[in-house]
Amino acid sequence: MKDLRKIKYISREIKEGDFVKFTGCTREQVMWGNNTDPENLLIYGGIYYVEKMIVKSSHTKLILRGVEGKFNSVCFECLGNGSF
Image 1 (tube, rainbow, N blue to C red):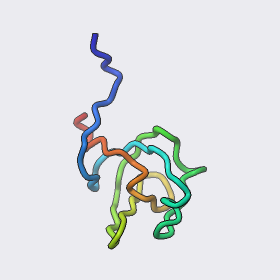
Image 2: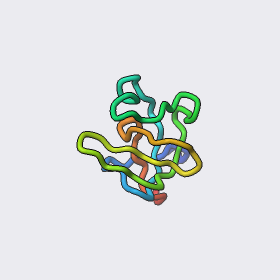
Image 3: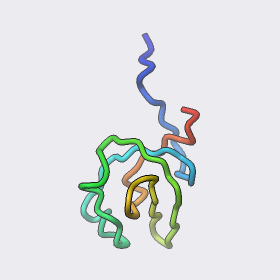
């Protein structure tokens, strides 16, 4: 029987307007490019909406709706634009 509660993940690059799942960050991923530490701001496995992206030469920062800060995109899994 198919479990309808499971979200089907979309394997693609994150874009503005996408929903993302926070998968956790290493200390190095936070420090790379002076990102915001998500420890007390994000919930592991939580779903967030990408309002804006800041593309740098070696990494991308995400600005999430309702959360103060800029977060390393490698700490997230793309869920798509809500059609999942």
